[in-house]
Length: 126
Image (cartoon, rainbow, N blue to C red; front, side, top):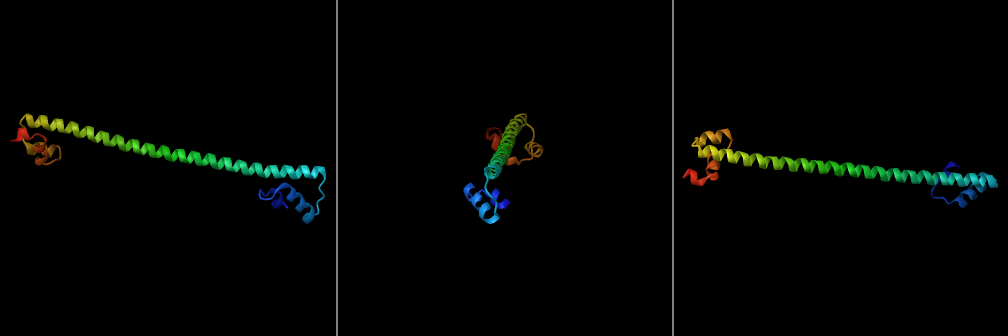
């Protein structure tokens, strides 16, 4: 009987008919109001569940988007920092080369090859 009352697939008039015919319940005005209230209750619960699902979906989507955005931002920040560090190291290497410091020593300190150093300032190495 509860299944019939709470079903969102069965219309209210059909519910009253089923209650009268299958459960031998007389449909007084009071009983019709109660059936209507139960029908509205099931619809309200369904709508509330849908709204909660939508809100959860939005929240999860926002969180996932926020997470991806944060990851992209961090990745981009690390890339920009690496580029900045690399440029600073190149400037330092050029200054050391200009000061006459041995290429092998500079290459060892900056963990690069002598050929990479020579590529930085071909005029100074020739």
